Image (cartoon, rainbow, N blue to C red; front, side, top):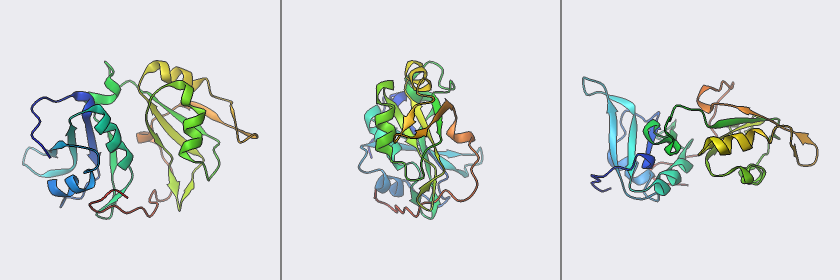
Length: 194
Protein backbone atom coordinates (compact mmCIF):
# COMPACT_ATOMS: atom_id res chain seq x y z
CA UNK A 1 0.00 0.00 0.00
CA UNK A 2 0.99 3.56 -0.49
CA UNK A 3 0.25 6.98 0.93
CA UNK A 4 -1.94 8.68 -1.59
CA UNK A 5 -2.51 12.37 -0.96
CA UNK A 6 -4.44 13.06 -4.15
CA UNK A 7 -7.64 11.01 -4.26
CA UNK A 8 -9.49 10.29 -7.48
CA UNK A 9 -13.14 9.85 -6.43
CA UNK A 10 -13.73 7.37 -9.27
CA UNK A 11 -10.95 5.20 -7.84
CA UNK A 12 -12.60 4.48 -4.49
CA UNK A 13 -14.39 1.22 -3.66
CA UNK A 14 -16.29 0.25 -0.53
CA UNK A 15 -15.83 -3.22 0.92
CA UNK A 16 -18.73 -4.35 3.14
CA UNK A 17 -19.37 -7.32 5.45
CA UNK A 18 -15.78 -7.47 6.63
CA UNK A 19 -15.04 -9.46 9.79
CA UNK A 20 -14.33 -7.27 12.79
CA UNK A 21 -10.90 -8.89 13.08
CA UNK A 22 -9.87 -7.71 9.58
CA UNK A 23 -6.60 -5.78 9.42
CA UNK A 24 -5.06 -3.58 6.77
CA UNK A 25 -2.58 -6.34 5.90
CA UNK A 26 -5.44 -8.78 5.22
CA UNK A 27 -6.99 -6.38 2.72
CA UNK A 28 -3.56 -5.77 1.18
CA UNK A 29 -3.19 -9.51 0.58
CA UNK A 30 -6.69 -9.91 -0.87
CA UNK A 31 -6.51 -6.92 -3.23
CA UNK A 32 -2.78 -7.10 -4.04
CA UNK A 33 -3.33 -7.79 -7.77
CA UNK A 34 -5.52 -4.71 -8.17
CA UNK A 35 -2.84 -2.11 -7.52
CA UNK A 36 -1.68 0.30 -4.83
CA UNK A 37 -4.25 1.69 -2.41
CA UNK A 38 -4.80 3.16 1.03
CA UNK A 39 -7.46 1.90 3.46
CA UNK A 40 -9.97 3.96 5.45
CA UNK A 41 -11.84 1.76 7.94
CA UNK A 42 -15.41 2.86 8.72
CA UNK A 43 -15.67 3.39 12.49
CA UNK A 44 -18.27 4.67 14.94
CA UNK A 45 -17.82 7.84 17.00
CA UNK A 46 -16.37 5.59 19.72
CA UNK A 47 -13.79 4.17 17.32
CA UNK A 48 -15.44 0.77 16.87
CA UNK A 49 -15.03 -0.88 13.47
CA UNK A 50 -18.35 -1.09 11.56
CA UNK A 51 -17.38 -3.91 9.20
CA UNK A 52 -16.70 -1.83 6.10
CA UNK A 53 -13.77 0.04 4.58
CA UNK A 54 -12.99 2.33 1.68
CA UNK A 55 -10.06 1.41 -0.55
CA UNK A 56 -8.54 4.44 -2.28
CA UNK A 57 -6.79 3.24 -5.45
CA UNK A 58 -4.51 5.33 -7.63
CA UNK A 59 -6.66 4.89 -10.77
CA UNK A 60 -10.26 4.07 -11.65
CA UNK A 61 -8.96 1.09 -13.68
CA UNK A 62 -7.51 -0.42 -10.49
CA UNK A 63 -10.78 0.22 -8.65
CA UNK A 64 -12.76 -1.55 -11.40
CA UNK A 65 -10.40 -4.53 -11.10
CA UNK A 66 -11.16 -4.64 -7.36
CA UNK A 67 -14.87 -5.04 -8.20
CA UNK A 68 -14.03 -8.51 -9.53
CA UNK A 69 -13.63 -9.61 -5.90
CA UNK A 70 -17.27 -8.85 -5.11
CA UNK A 71 -18.82 -11.93 -3.50
CA UNK A 72 -15.62 -13.76 -2.53
CA UNK A 73 -15.43 -15.49 0.81
CA UNK A 74 -13.03 -13.72 3.15
CA UNK A 75 -12.52 -15.12 6.65
CA UNK A 76 -15.76 -17.12 6.33
CA UNK A 77 -17.80 -14.08 5.21
CA UNK A 78 -18.99 -13.19 1.73
CA UNK A 79 -17.81 -9.66 1.16
CA UNK A 80 -19.39 -7.04 -1.06
CA UNK A 81 -17.18 -4.76 -3.18
CA UNK A 82 -18.78 -1.78 -4.91
CA UNK A 83 -17.89 1.65 -6.20
CA UNK A 84 -18.14 4.22 -3.41
CA UNK A 85 -21.02 6.66 -3.69
CA UNK A 86 -18.58 9.53 -4.14
CA UNK A 87 -17.07 7.83 -7.18
CA UNK A 88 -19.83 5.71 -8.64
CA UNK A 89 -19.37 5.78 -12.37
CA UNK A 90 -18.17 9.38 -12.23
CA UNK A 91 -21.71 10.69 -12.48
CA UNK A 92 -22.85 13.99 -11.03
CA UNK A 93 -25.54 12.27 -9.01
CA UNK A 94 -24.08 9.02 -7.72
CA UNK A 95 -27.45 8.04 -6.21
CA UNK A 96 -29.03 7.88 -9.67
CA UNK A 97 -29.70 4.21 -10.48
CA UNK A 98 -27.61 2.86 -13.35
CA UNK A 99 -28.47 -0.82 -12.97
CA UNK A 100 -30.76 -3.21 -14.79
CA UNK A 101 -32.16 -6.53 -13.66
CA UNK A 102 -32.18 -9.23 -16.34
CA UNK A 103 -34.74 -12.00 -15.76
CA UNK A 104 -35.54 -15.29 -17.46
CA UNK A 105 -31.93 -16.47 -17.65
CA UNK A 106 -30.90 -20.15 -17.67
CA UNK A 107 -29.41 -21.61 -14.48
CA UNK A 108 -26.04 -22.10 -16.18
CA UNK A 109 -25.76 -18.55 -17.59
CA UNK A 110 -22.19 -17.37 -18.16
CA UNK A 111 -20.86 -13.83 -17.73
CA UNK A 112 -19.54 -14.03 -21.29
CA UNK A 113 -23.08 -14.50 -22.66
CA UNK A 114 -24.29 -11.42 -20.81
CA UNK A 115 -21.25 -9.43 -21.95
CA UNK A 116 -22.03 -10.34 -25.57
CA UNK A 117 -25.73 -9.55 -25.23
CA UNK A 118 -25.11 -6.08 -23.71
CA UNK A 119 -21.82 -5.24 -25.46
CA UNK A 120 -23.40 -2.55 -27.65
CA UNK A 121 -24.72 -0.70 -24.57
CA UNK A 122 -21.37 0.66 -23.44
CA UNK A 123 -19.09 0.26 -20.47
CA UNK A 124 -20.30 -1.91 -17.60
CA UNK A 125 -19.06 -1.34 -14.06
CA UNK A 126 -20.08 -4.80 -12.92
CA UNK A 127 -22.19 -7.83 -13.67
CA UNK A 128 -23.61 -9.76 -10.73
CA UNK A 129 -25.27 -13.14 -11.16
CA UNK A 130 -26.70 -14.36 -7.82
CA UNK A 131 -26.04 -18.08 -7.49
CA UNK A 132 -26.75 -20.86 -5.07
CA UNK A 133 -24.88 -24.15 -5.23
CA UNK A 134 -23.28 -22.91 -8.45
CA UNK A 135 -26.60 -22.33 -10.24
CA UNK A 136 -28.06 -18.98 -11.21
CA UNK A 137 -31.38 -17.83 -9.76
CA UNK A 138 -32.34 -16.96 -13.33
CA UNK A 139 -31.47 -13.31 -13.03
CA UNK A 140 -28.53 -10.93 -13.21
CA UNK A 141 -27.81 -7.33 -12.29
CA UNK A 142 -25.74 -5.17 -14.60
CA UNK A 143 -24.47 -1.77 -13.53
CA UNK A 144 -23.53 0.69 -16.25
CA UNK A 145 -21.31 3.74 -16.30
CA UNK A 146 -23.81 6.17 -17.86
CA UNK A 147 -27.50 6.89 -18.34
CA UNK A 148 -27.02 6.47 -22.09
CA UNK A 149 -25.73 2.91 -21.58
CA UNK A 150 -28.63 2.21 -19.23
CA UNK A 151 -31.19 3.37 -21.82
CA UNK A 152 -29.63 1.10 -24.46
CA UNK A 153 -29.70 -1.84 -22.04
CA UNK A 154 -33.40 -1.35 -21.32
CA UNK A 155 -34.07 -1.69 -25.07
CA UNK A 156 -32.73 -5.28 -24.89
CA UNK A 157 -35.98 -6.17 -23.08
CA UNK A 158 -37.72 -9.02 -24.93
CA UNK A 159 -34.54 -10.21 -26.67
CA UNK A 160 -33.99 -13.91 -27.24
CA UNK A 161 -31.12 -15.78 -25.64
CA UNK A 162 -29.94 -19.22 -26.78
CA UNK A 163 -32.49 -19.20 -29.60
CA UNK A 164 -35.54 -19.80 -27.40
CA UNK A 165 -35.34 -17.95 -24.08
CA UNK A 166 -37.05 -14.58 -24.01
CA UNK A 167 -35.51 -12.33 -21.39
CA UNK A 168 -36.88 -9.38 -19.45
CA UNK A 169 -34.76 -6.30 -18.77
CA UNK A 170 -35.94 -3.69 -16.27
CA UNK A 171 -34.47 -1.17 -13.87
CA UNK A 172 -33.03 -3.02 -10.91
CA UNK A 173 -30.88 -2.46 -7.86
CA UNK A 174 -28.83 -5.47 -6.68
CA UNK A 175 -28.57 -4.08 -3.15
CA UNK A 176 -32.37 -4.25 -2.77
CA UNK A 177 -32.89 -7.73 -4.16
CA UNK A 178 -34.50 -10.36 -2.04
CA UNK A 179 -33.59 -13.87 -3.00
CA UNK A 180 -34.15 -16.81 -0.70
CA UNK A 181 -31.38 -19.14 0.30
CA UNK A 182 -27.68 -18.75 0.69
CA UNK A 183 -25.61 -16.69 -1.72
CA UNK A 184 -22.42 -18.59 -1.03
CA UNK A 185 -20.86 -20.46 -3.89
CA UNK A 186 -18.13 -22.17 -1.96
CA UNK A 187 -15.59 -19.67 -3.26
CA UNK A 188 -12.81 -19.05 -0.81
CA UNK A 189 -10.26 -16.30 -0.78
CA UNK A 190 -8.22 -15.79 2.33
CA UNK A 191 -5.51 -13.36 1.53
CA UNK A 192 -5.37 -14.19 -2.18
CA UNK A 193 -7.43 -13.77 -5.28
CA UNK A 194 -8.63 -17.12 -6.59
